[in-house]
Image 1 (cartoon, rainbow, N blue to C red):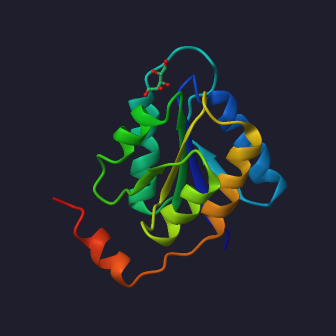
Image 2: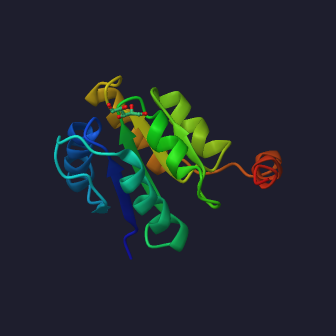
Image 3: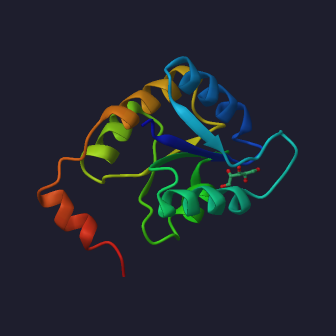
Length: 144
Ligand code: RB5
């Protein structure tokens, strides 16, 4: 069974989210888009919370969240207990977010990343496994 990837953005992240959808479709991934659905100004928490809830419930094992800087939507989704979202702007960081942090949401800064770099971040994030070991101990200690 294919795993559905959850997507969310605000208006500033909308163009990259549309590009991400094309990239996922071309590679056979299934996705669920939690919005927004245009470049009309909106508030990122609305869409970030919807995505984070779907990842928490298991509906979407992984998510991709985008706003202008990545910061606002990253703060939003990381308020959810079982979310480990990582703000990534280069593929090496996306790789380590999976290997060391077992991140379940990839966050990208739509206004500060080009499509090619975003694709590399996506590819490594979706195809890199968690290393466990000492990193498991560290992520277990994150919740307060
Ligand atoms: C929207 O203008 C912008 O503030 C938002 O996309 C994000 O960068 C906030 O953190």
